[in-house]
Amino acid sequence: MSDDDRRAARIIRAILTRNIDSDLDAASLEIVTALRGHGWRPTNAHPTPPWQPQPGEALGPDIVHHCAAQVRAALTEALERAAQTEGTHAATRGDTSA
Image (cartoon, rainbow, N blue to C red; front, side):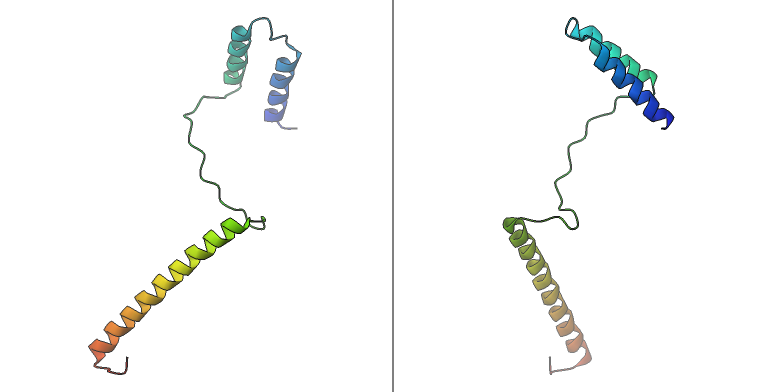
């Protein structure tokens, strides 16, 4: 068990063995003070990033259809760009077969 684990266990034990029903403000201040004494510092809250499916996770049909539509759109766009690029290259080479 590391020092951090021991510190966390002491804080948890202190919280659980205390009767905090009597004075919640004092108990919460004591808990925050104990956490700060062990190195915790408050940080700005950040919004939760949008959910992304994890590798190997089962996906619902609506997500599969949405992802498939995105892939199809990207593939169509890439093929159209490639066709335009090939047409531009053929015109600059004087190739009329394209």
